[in-house]
Image (cartoon, rainbow, N blue to C red):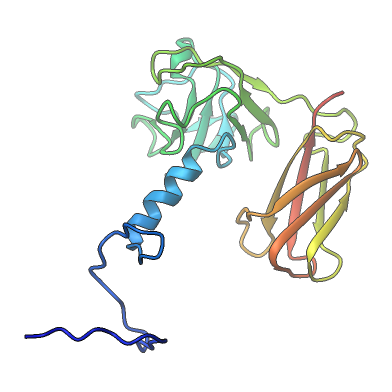
Length: 236
């Protein structure tokens, strides 16, 4: 039976699914959802900045039998944890907590040599000692996971601003550009932007315009006061 060629133009599937699509092999091909996820996960995993962790260690932790709490925080399933104080420094790194007494497993974005490279950095959300701090990997490459001793060093912060040097909600009016005046006196800053409604980090372009101003631009309109920015500044 002859197969008719589809005509050019738009098609309305009426909310139906186009399934069993093979992986695209050309730039104009239609990729499968699995192919898209693989490409995105690979790109994200290889970034130096990793998704934030809930807590970071203050002393050696048993990797094979996780404690119920770290740095004063009671852990829950799927919490991300930064281990930075291991007696065997090769165990340091980013892990995922399953349950008390179960083994910690290395996070999917930090369990391979291509993903754990000099300059990796991560921020900590909670904890008695480590809340709102940032840590970076100062070990030189090449790195072999589980063999190379990993050293995480606190990212130095400007004094006077607390753990989070500057935080603001904005923009003051909807638009694709948000100018943030932080007055930290340096371009050596790290900035994260979240959606206020969902607490999800958003992908925007960030430029240190001058020593006291950060310019945030987006491909879509940013709603008025719909976003939160936290800026860390390195000590001059």
